[in-house]
Amino acid sequence: MVIDASAQYIHIMLHGEYDIARQEELRSELEPAYCAAMALLDMSAVSYIDASALTELIRLRKHMPEPAIIRMVGVMANIRRLLNVTGLVKMFEIYDTVKNALTEWQMEQGSPRR
Image (cartoon, rainbow, N blue to C red; front, side):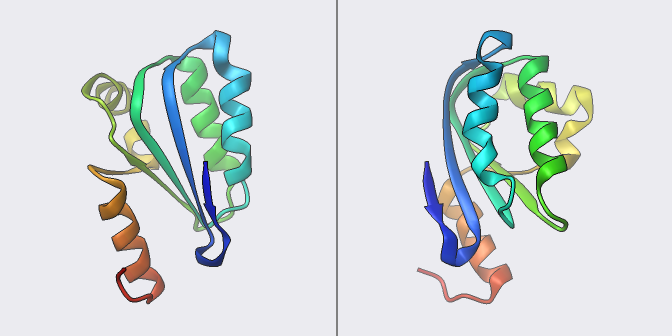
């Protein structure tokens, strides 16, 4: 996990399969983002999620202050399909790379590009 408090965002790198057996672990991994203006979730090493993981993503969104943003990067096709089918894709902004997501964040914050 990478935290950049000056930019008011948190970068969380997730990995593996998230199912009911790992729900509490996922909740613990996401909790640091509850107060962030933007959560950047790197999903490139996540191969599977189930309804319990979706529950934790919804919980994250509900705990974040408005108008907080959740950006996901590296979302595999099967997970993207699940987000689309459930309609939850509307809760997230999906990017191909961390660099693209952060560049847009910096532009929105009025910061110069790195």
